Image: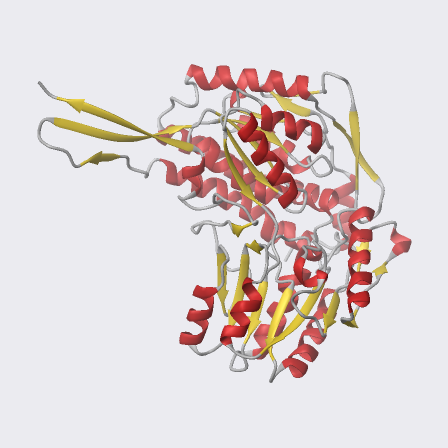
Length: 497
């Protein structure tokens, strides 16, 4: 619960003092060009603040400072236990400013305040605190050698890392990138999505307050195309991490190959299969099926947008999911009772509407929703939408819609369910529902995704890795495994006289 009323949240939002300037060398600063970009509240269509629109000159300046900071050792050479304390203090400061940061995330992204208060901010705090606590508990190795040699395997920071984060979960993904990258001693250039930079800018202020050296983190709002490509091609960036669309991820991987082969880790799109067997807890599965596709207005790479249901229960289960969808009516994100806010902008809303039209043209049956709504607010709202009569080769079952659109697909048996689930260019997340542990485990093992739930969707926490197979990307966020993305292994072979 948020503990405040709708009116109180609106009043608090009006009282926010928002700084849209970039963060370079520990200070808020305008872009060198003086250019700005207006950010808009997706729930109202009204402007929020002018944000610095950084360009290549800003990036070059930040990268130079980041490199000098890294080479100085002021952060990279600090003892892991001391870096830990900075990150722990940073997490505590974010927790202290939780209401402000939750509000920034809600007005910038359109996420319901109940989610930003209870999910997004606590997740960021947990990620940063956990990563800080973990870094002084990772041991390096002595390899087995003969008595005339000693072989050390040490883990070193990459150097300067560029992190590009998306607009759908800007706070959470920023924490996923910054926490392990900074914990391992790197200097970081963070490029938030140009339309949702506010929470990233604010938590950067708190990082310096916690004791992070000024040159170890820079936050550059700016256009994804030109600025992102410049970071991808830059010869003085040693590693890059990106969460976003598959086409952009492919471009960044190409940039790596065309420049200095910078280590590039990508978390990209998805078309999550959510498989339901007849012996499942059908009430729980139906509720979770709605959550899996309508949470965050469907703007989730792991969304369970393909509901694969055994043919013997298809019709009755569909009725249950339709009933559960009624709990996801779009509304004012500053109302604590709202479960689903707007799309990020009108363009995304129009894209979802186009896919609804494609589904109808393909012959799928629209059984729930299907329209934009609440136009009088000025916001970009779209109804929860469900199609039945879908087969897996339809465009709506193959392409990532990134909106609240569910395709319901029947299956005959476990082998058929696995075949449908794997018939996708993506492999990010999914789930299987069955009380038969043998069936559930075999299906979960056979589906080619990075995260698979058994009798749950969106399961997992900071202790487990997150990432995908196939065109869903490479590398991993979260857990100790994320530290691998931001470090190099070095062998030192010592021979004795």
